Length: 92
Image 1 (cartoon, rainbow, N blue to C red):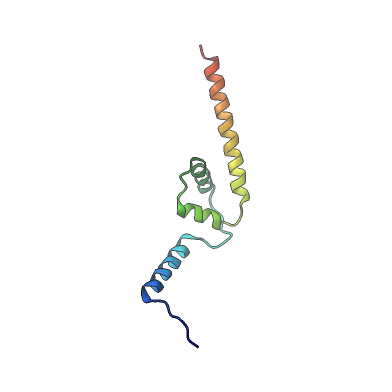
Image 2 (cartoon, helix red, strand yellow):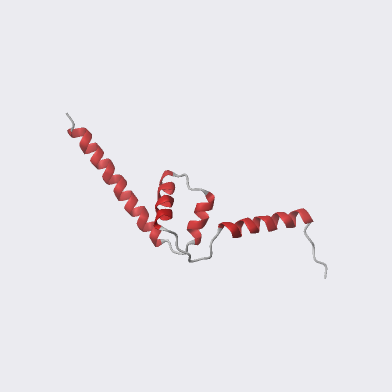
């Protein structure tokens, strides 16, 4: 059998990418702290989530804490805007 072998520089590049991916991701199903969840929610809302944190979030296993955090953040954001507008409209 004749197998095509990759050049050495491509092998090392692939190995390096795999090592970086392994270092970034946690084992599937690991829980993140409430602080990390809050920071991820704020960063995602503003649009500045880092690649490393996004990978950590996707490796955490469950989407439900992120959905709940997003709904709570959205409610607080809209409520805050409503209070601000109400305060500005009623100021002398």
